[in-house]
Structures are given as structure tokens and as C-alpha cells.
Length: 423
Ligand code: LLP
Image (cartoon, rainbow, N blue to C red; front, side):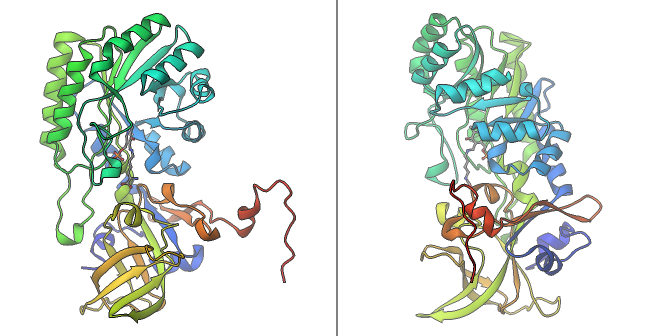
């Protein structure tokens, strides 16, 4: 059971976690191309409606090689910053394939996108005014707050009254006035109600809401329905994936009916991040210590929250697989253990009170479903090095797709850099 997912999916191809770690070091992000492609196709086939496009939300994972695969699979992209735009262009996305969903940005950042020919979505009246002042007569999109949101944690609910995002529908007259004042073309509206739902109902409700709002605007070219599609993080307990078929058909019916009646040329979009990349990534780390403190058994690893922030930031659950150092047989006995990292805070816990096979120093742990918001939220806290990233190609061979930070990288932004004299 504790290596079930990677065995079932032939995750590591012709390598083993121990081989990969001994070659590339620990911790290590490992991605599987076959799983990534499958998840891309789930999304491009999700809504059976001809004028439907998927914008991959690059914030979930911006590795260049993964982006190239995602582009090959026919996805477009949404970006949240000039840095994301820059990397998308480097991965071969064309400006027309990118939507810049900005939030509280400077005029310079807006114009960075505009000058590249990328459509900008703004999400407040104040930012619409800034956009109009700097790009009068230009194309613009507006992010709508549909009045409710959803998400696996309060911090990732992005619709409703407790969030900074979007323009409420009671401000639509003011949107129209600004559009007129600056002779802007409102080419699209977009929304994103939050991250991670496992049941399509709220999404469908939000689709209906944005379509109602869309009727108040003329000449829209697109309506972007947002992301948030969840994945089952508790597969070891039998959690089932999101049921996409019926859900997609229901959305398609609503979209077709609306388009027939109000705007047959409209393009619809969604913007999934997590769904596309979460399951194709496993984070490997190594057990370096074991101890008992006040009745709690700890496994000390290199899986600090500098490498994976989700458990600390959102109390997020990730299943754990154990790859024992000695022999390939995982013990069938279990003990309750709290898996912690090597960072200077007590909150540095990857998995609390887990029933795992007894761990030994040198065992490797695989943190499942780490492809989304894993590397992209990692940091150099405690001056730790960001890990390498490896891709298991479709033929089972592995490839380094981002090298590990070096110690020198920690000094590269200092102007008066003087190579330290090492003892
Ligand atoms: N569109 C917009 C405007 C977004 O802000 C996001 C995510 C997405 C699309 C993609 O959402 P997804 O399909 O991945 O749920 N760091 C958190 C998730 C934060 C999501 C932020 N916005 C986590 O690790 O759970």
C-alpha cells in the first residue's frame, strides 16, 4: 500500500527513487511525463464545446520543460506576473495564447504585457483607471467577483465578500463608464472562485453567475470561467478523483444555450493549475534522524517547508510513500510518526501522526501529488538550496530539467560579491 501510487503508474520508469537521489541529491522533485500529458488531455476534453480553450495557470508549476509539454498538448496559459509571462514566452507560448490576470500591479507591469501583445485583465476600478490612463483605446478584460467562493482553505478562496479579488456586480455601471471614458474595448471577463473543489456544483453555479453578468456587456470575445479543479490528495484512503464527464457535459449545455442566445462567437476558457500538474509530481526526501520527544515519534528529514510549503501554510495533506534503504519490501507493520523537516521552526511539519512502516535513517520518503504549488512555492529560507527537478520521460528515461541551486547561487544577487574564502 505504501508504494501503491508509484507502482501502479510506473512513476519512476527505468529508475528507482534511490538511484535518482544518489545521482541528483535529496530533496528532489520528480515529474512523470505520461501523467502530465494525461491530465492535460483530461482538461482539453473536459467541456465538449467547440469554442473552449484551457489556460494552464502557470503559478502551479513554472518549470520550462513541463510548460513545453503543456503547450504541445494544446493548452494556452494564464499568468499572474511579468515573470510568469517571461517564462511562458521562453517555453514557446505566443502572446495571443497568454492572458495576464493581474492583481494590484503597477502601470509598468500592465504595459509590459500590453507591449508584448498580451491581453490584460484588471480586477478593480482603480486598476481599470490606471490601465485606461496608460493605454487609452486598448483591449482589456475585467475580473468579476461572482459573490461567492470555494477552496480547500480560507487562504485560497478568491470569490465572495472576504477576498481582495474581482469587481462586484454592483460596480458594473462604473466599469462601463471607465471603458467609455478611455475608449477601451472590453474583450473579456473572467473569474476564479478559489482553489480545489471535488464536486462540480459550485463551479456550475459560478458559471451561471458569470454568464448572467456577461449579458450586461456587448461585444465580448471571451468569458473565462476560472480554475480550481481538485485532485484527490488522500488516495491511500481511497479518495476518488473529480468526476469530469458529467460535470463537463453539464457545463457544455449551459454554455451552448447561452452562446446560441446571446453571442454565438464567444470563446469560453477555464484556467486549471493544480489539476494539470499536481499528480505528475512526487517530492523525494531522506530520513536523517529519528527521535522521540515527549511521547511523539519524529522522523527528521530534509523535507522542510522551504521545499514544500503547503502542509505548513494550509495544513494540507500529502500521502507519503516509503522507499526503504534496505531491500525493496516495505514492512507491513505500522507506527505513528510525525515527519518533520530541517528548518528552524516548530511548525516545520510535513505530515503529523501518520501511520507509516517503521522508518530508518537512509530511507527515502515520497511526498505524493507535489507537482502543483510545490517547487513554485519553495524558497531559500535558512539559506537552503532549492532542489533539482527531474522528468521521467514517456520512454521511462530520466532527465534533469532544473539543476539544484549551488551555494554560489545564494550570493549571486549581491553587488559587491566577493568570493568567500573557505576554510
Ligand atoms: N486562476 C487564478 C486567477 C488563480 O488565482 C488561480 C490560483 C488559478 C486560476 C488556478 O487555480 P487551481 O486550478 O490551481 O486551483 N497555493 C495554493 C493554491 C493557490 C491558488 C491560487 N490561485 C495551494 O497550494 O493549495
